[in-house]
Length: 190
Image 1: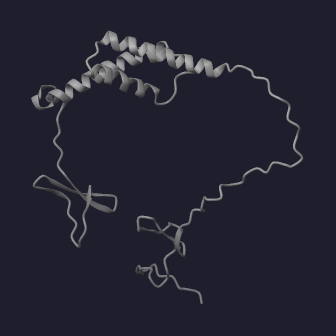
Image 2: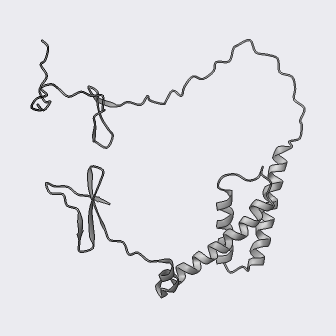
């Protein structure tokens, strides 16, 4: 999306370029080429894309069966499903059959289960008794290199990092700038 700049802002379409307003800013973009799912499946230019999508769908279904049915909850973690799907998709892309990819996936998942069970049951090692120290341990309060966040303020108006001026709703306009509406003029106290 490109921003419109200049004294004149327009909305509409000219030669495949769409001009529009979003919020208080005017943008423009090129017109997208919409394709329905039916057109994508039949388009010869997208044949390879559809083959990749089908292979990825096969990989995701294979991983889903193993991930949710055979992996214990202690092994599952965020991002593991996606990583496993990517591995199976790569194996299928390299030319392995579904059965070979399934066997490799099962072997990899068994390794994951063994790693987590070995971490869960550590062997006890004898530890020598350490005499207590007389010096109290000081707790860290905050990182020394972390700078406090600073905002750039002009009275109660804030200049944001992108250079835009943010005026809060609580800011009251100056009386000299306030527009006078006939019949609703207030007298200022002196």
